[in-house]
Amino acid sequence: MYLENPVFNARYIEPNISWYVSYFRGNRGIARVWREPITWVLKKFFLKSYFQKRVAQGKVDIPYLELVLTTKCTLRCESCNNLMQYFSSKNQYTCTLEGILESLDCLLENVESIQRLRIIGGEPLMFKDLPQLVAALEQREKVRSFDVLTNGTIGFKEALLQEIKKAKKFRKVSISDYSNAPNLKIPLKQESIFKSLKAYKIPYSFLTGGIWYKVEKIYKRNRTKEGIIANFHACGMSCVSLMSGDVRKNQSKVKAGGGAIFVCPIASSLSKLKGIEEFSGDYIALEKGDLRDRIFSFYAQDFFKSCDYCQDWSKPKENIPAAIQADSVLEIGEDRD
Ligand code: SF4
Ligand code: SF4
Image (cartoon, rainbow, N blue to C red; front, side):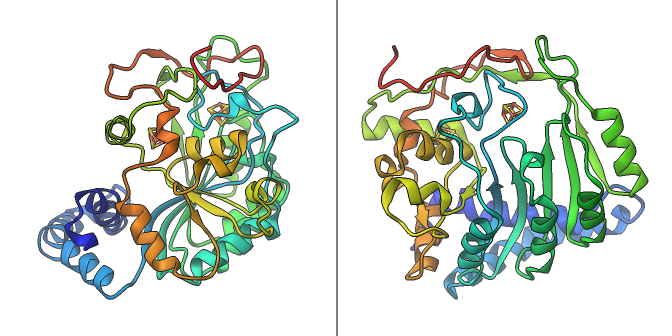
């Protein structure tokens, strides 16, 4: 039934194929001369039926997953797509190492692989056990590759550099370039980060560009169900994200460790900001039971209550400079005001 569902194909089958293709094609270089045609043949004749067959066999391959470690950040970008501008010291989420691993392990027991995992925040370098997390991810066989995204305001400590260096599945550090942001309140440490990553021969990419689109205020729009589904389709966000049980234990009497997977970081942050009860049906609760089927069903779903809180993604987006800072914490309203 899932294989005939266009949403499932777009959210699950196609991203799995894309990941496999990019992995096989590899980095730029001479090997691409022979890898490129093989990749084309794989994509054209093999990969779709391969992943479809695995679904029919009940085998689950998560194409991409973001691990949200904390909502704390050194910056407060007005148009942060993860909604960090709405968190204050009173409502922050930070997982524990045990909590995030317990949630991840619950997921891993029920899937064959996570193809690509990204460590995010807020700012993930504010998570004190990041070296231990890197070591733990490296040990989990079903995690095929992982990387980390940082805003370039915190230097890499020795322990972290050493663990990343040892991790064979670690792909790269991605560093956002906010050097043209108009009103940053703290200095960037890009040069010293480059230097330490080079010293340890750790691959990295510098995400230059400097133009974002404006993220409008988040509030419940009270759209119709059809309107909410339409907004989901217009958005095209593919960043499925996992929060540990620490997001649920304060809010819904769920034991710690039973984390959840959300359609995107906006949805995971909303669950913390508004209370997860408001978003029943939106997320996969990481508990024992029919988890495989719930994962497939999640990828076939196109109605998420959280999509009612987002701006109308079918309208043209307004470009703005990256990382404009908000002066104070924003508040989510019930309506426009
Ligand atoms: S640096 Fe800005 S965009 Fe990135 S997580 Fe922090 S607040 Fe959000
Ligand atoms: S909440 Fe829905 S509409 Fe908003 S970014 Fe996430 S998937 Fe897109």
